[in-house]
Length: 366
Image (cartoon, rainbow, N blue to C red):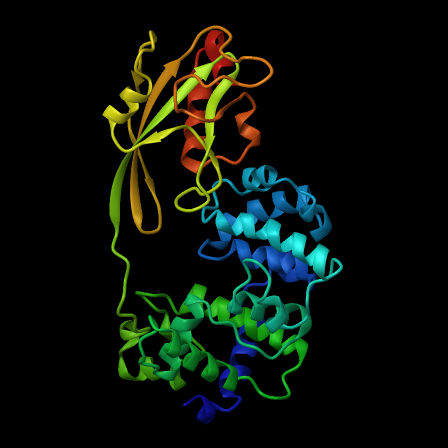
């Protein structure tokens, strides 16, 4: 099927993108691989409208790969807070350090070499190579898998690696051998735009699609059949109790494990149930204050967070090192919590408490 389309798919998509695609995004105005790479990583499983503000703030703090390579992980995570999938932020730092340490501060020019860097998968590597260096390689993120599986009528199960590789081969076969850098840039952006704005998962706007007459799924009325994936993650829910310890020295924060939810971020101590929290602070003379629970939605999990506040008076910090307020509760007091990497729901909750607290006691949150 890919061969029979010849250059029709490619040429149509290039022309459609130039006339109807998105052109005002800040990372579209450059072929600087640092900026393109940053945007591509931020856009992984994140909507454009969310990324825009983060992208600008990140560039203000780290205008080039050398500046990012010299950053502290806490600085990077603090700027990333709220974007989710925090391994992306840690890999950004690792990648910048490798680009500077191994490649002399210059990004490799081929998708094969780019894919060897931390946090750069094959599709992201293809996007950087196509946008910045004109390489003839197709991207194949989730949106593009949907577009191409519908157009080609590709019915293999994309839960398997073999099927993904087969679709990728067909995707690359759609690119003419004489495709130039400008056309490759428009084509790659066109794939993204078509998947984001036209070829939607549940309600594709087929009447506005430039591929309607050559799309197998549109011709058969089977758009919702594609892409085929047998294994789908089921949503789950968990309840977590948050122990918010206050003192004149700040808030007690722990570093989260490097694996799992909010990996590597600073966070208040978390407990699977209320009794475990109470046991952790047993013997405290201060009264626990239970505040209203709230819900935080992750991609495949709903978190119900139960804040429990405990205010400790007096100087609870021993010099020169912080004292552990309760046995086994490792961490440290942080007064300037707004400058460190926090999970988005905790940051939002703390800011709300800060705004709601009376001026006379606000220093507990500041």
